[in-house]
Length: 484
Image 1 (cartoon, rainbow, N blue to C red):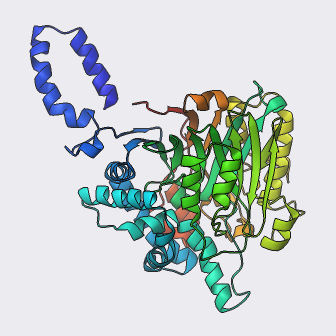
Image 2: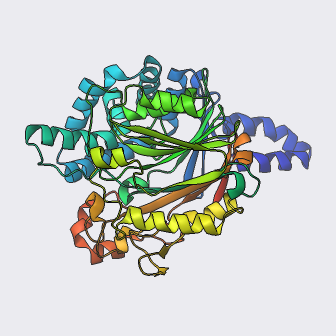
Image 3: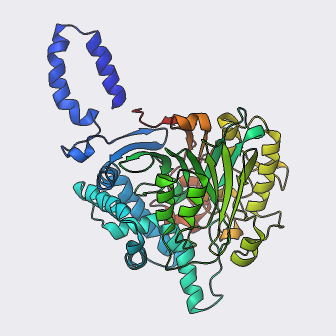
């Protein structure tokens, strides 16, 4: 619609007298559409959305309640779809229904959420209600905390009731890098990330959010509809931080008294002004949920860090000249021994194979790492176990739906519909302008087409209501504050 507005402007500039007389009437009729809002609610005055190359861009601005209302209103249909998808997938994958997750959100999480974010979540609910959607705050909290609840809390409960009964198959998703100094083209930070997840969720991880809160940092990130954090975690902040992560695979441990990971992540995005701030916020009240190796860059200090955030152990590496990569492997011996069942010496697993490929690529591109080479690396499909291109669990831009072995490290059966669903990359210079490149769909260029997949793999047909085609769109530049 913003594009239409520009065409209207050109039409007016080259107009005749009749056009000039008609324009005011046209503007009265089109105003709600040109602003992206169909409501007179003043809370929506600064908010808008547009769609581009598989992504939904949203701009949110104001108080926590206003930001939430804008979010819920602009993404009402997508949030409803997201909750319904999870209400189908979570019982199948975890054995617990949506009512269980709502109860956990209410009884365990709600009281541990900062008032600011309670207000924002309440605002999301109000925005949803304005669009006729029947959800409450516990639905939104369960949505935000779904990974830590399903992958950490549920196994914790099973093992508490019967020790050793639940395998720790914590997710091992995503491939990422961060580099600076002699590794990059300009000596400044470059960062990239691609999101591995099940395709039903992944096709919905398609929001680019520009958030300007009244307090704290501006936040520019990708996320799922209904999230108050990034979730797969690719973030540029007004505090000068670049943030991403990959999950520590086969992690065990959860503290029911801790603060939800999604709350700590959003707080760090909004309030951290340094790497040390980030570590402090993420460590404070750590519940062990969604345990990650965080890759963080400070563009003001030109320094990068790898923050391995276990529950019992936290390890931080920093450098102003180097590169850190992530493919779901843990590095600290204490974390590996005490908090995982991860085997760092098994070269056939996805984390270790991708790590080896990352090490080769970052050596190959040393001195040349940038947003451009970041796109190439995040879309790489060379399998180091065979030395040939592949579409499986062992490549950076992985595709388990075409892998006959599946991904046993985190419980994905053969041909599981999961893998890389999107990618992002940016540099320090771009981040100063709040810009990043985003690619919806597998960055290798591989499309996922649902109908033939279900025909070949009917064991996954239960996903058919919510698993759709996932095309590989082109890399697209997003700029915070843009209107198209």
